[in-house]
Image (cartoon, rainbow, N blue to C red; front, side):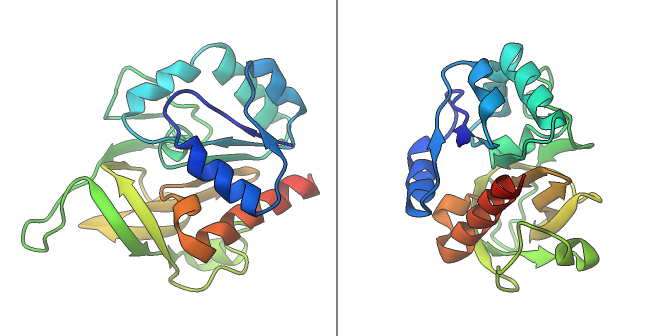
Amino acid sequence: MIALIDYGAGNLTSVRKALTALGAEFHTPQSPEECASASGLIVPGVGNFAATAALEGPWRDTIAKVVAGGIPLFGICLGMQWLFEGSDEAPEVKGLAVLPGRVTRLRGNAEQRLKIPHVGWNALETHGCRAMTSRLLGEVPPRAHVYFTHSYAAPVTADCVASTTHAEPFAAMVERDRIFGVQFHPEKSGEAGLQILRNFLAVCSAC
């Protein structure tokens, strides 16, 4: 059973539809304690990083404990940013810090007509051997196009398995052990996005 975390900033409707289409069993826990029995956790999100402050305290502690125990965690968009140490968008709010690095504001480019927020479809640029061993990228076509809508992004680090560029490169997909994140919205990214969700569900089933 997948626990879909609702902290008031997630586009749960579209994620629920995607999970239903994939035949996944999921629920939205009403208390942190309900996460303990989950086979995997999904933290979605849209909007300002300050919204993740709702996860501070018992939710953050429980999620960190469950993940430390080996349960897979998947962050989507703002949920992926929350996996890092923090964001310049809301400096006073701490991230989960299961991945090193800090989220920063994207840069636009007037000459290239690249605006902020970044909204639209971009190709995934995979990162060598990291992509070859990625469990999220299995069966995903090379340079698959996925849908983004955001103003802030995580840096390209050793945990990045795929990046894309909006004036400058940023992390589009991250993966470390059983921690996964995507800056884009897989539930709105057609078959490529569904395959990424399918791959995460497979990881949860194998644990």
